[in-house]
Image (tube, rainbow, N blue to C red; front, side, top):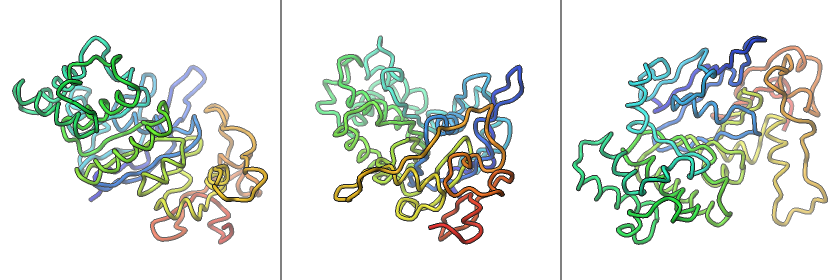
Length: 324
């Protein structure tokens, strides 16, 4: 049984002019110890999917359909208090800006110790020992001294390591990491990516890694889910999706990445932009930007079809046996 099962998830925003569907029937699973990378442009629905799993959707956003199961137990319909107990204990979260995740008025040690004691049956002394151990595990030097520092006294990379330590404090089964490297220098990004991979391997933790950076996905993920306009358009092993993408949108994303040694005068560009939630076109949502669209694409929505071992794509050309 997969650790996390998301089936036909729908996230909507009710408005005076009707409902806006931001995540539209998205389904995927994550096994224990596996990293699923979720990629797409801004507005694709990546972060909303992560927030729905954590139970932190901002009103008026709400889950309007589908189900989310963690270790076989349904969690999307739990009361807020029951979900709060699961969040932190069973699900950890790492957000893009560590300054918004940390309380500037409390030392990092105090914040770690409070989290540990909330979810684990430890006294103050044992919680402090565990907090120091966590800081050491995420690569913070001299943790015995740094534990009494305030967030503003640490660099951006160090603060993000503290956020990762907080996410792991109660040994959760799943970590949702929403753009965890975006605000960091490239060299620090690489260190955080390696840290996530090591922790996943050593603890057996499943990770949903939300990002727009295909380089981070290639370096970190085991499987990739590609979202466009709230819909899942491709899902498969990272090697297959990167080396042989089947959906035109994924092909455009991969073609836009510069490669060392490649003799190309110009990178591939995806024309146009992501549609607004109140203007998602009928049929395949990508068809106005797709260079291969034909009549059926404009009227019928394609479903995910198998294109290889554990690899699926939602494209009429793929279903017809065309495409690369």
